[in-house]
Image (tube, rainbow, N blue to C red; front, side, top):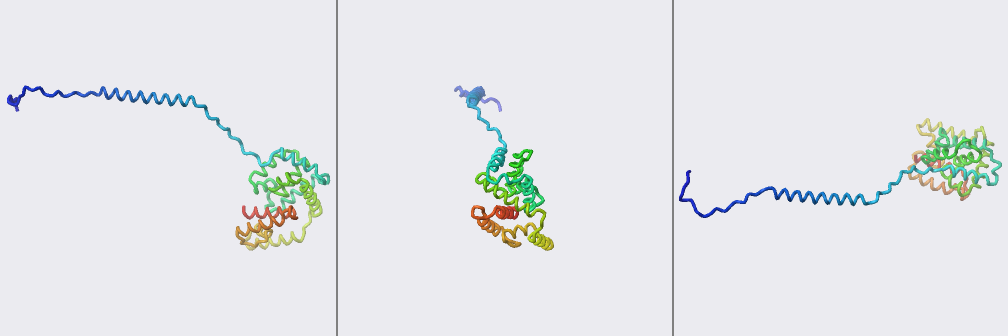
Length: 253
């Protein structure tokens, strides 16, 4: 369509405002500047904070230290009856106690590690060569009492010496001899093997006065009862106390 002069008006038309992105850019730049200032303040605050002290990693403490072994040996040497003990007899006693345990294929270090992981390793690491009489007596105490040796060596070294004397005397008397009880034990082991049962487990159950198939609860109850009965403080012997503990540790392992 062409121009229609009838629709033309002399009144001025409202002017349309041309928008620009200049103001938006300025506002955006101002927001960025505020954010930069805030980040700088945070960085300055972090720089002024004291650095945290880092705790260095420390290796776990040994269960037995060389200082303890030397102190125990010195305490044993001061007790009555120490002069009667012989290092060769103590070494034979250690071997005999290992053979009479429920894991006869293990040496003393391995047997102690089986009871408490790391105990045998730390004990032998704290007992350097050459092994003298004092250090050998400490090893014999662990062979006799097991885990409880630490308590006995600390609290009553006199009793430890007396027990070692008695055990050494008995060991010398029965050296290389086979008793009737050993024969009966061997017969029971052969019979258990023929029946498909572990003879070591049968022997451990026998020590606790239990039969094959005893529950874990029954084993715990028998152990608590026999520990109270054979504890040396109530008139029991260290040998019986050790055998009860070894049997329990073997059954629950």
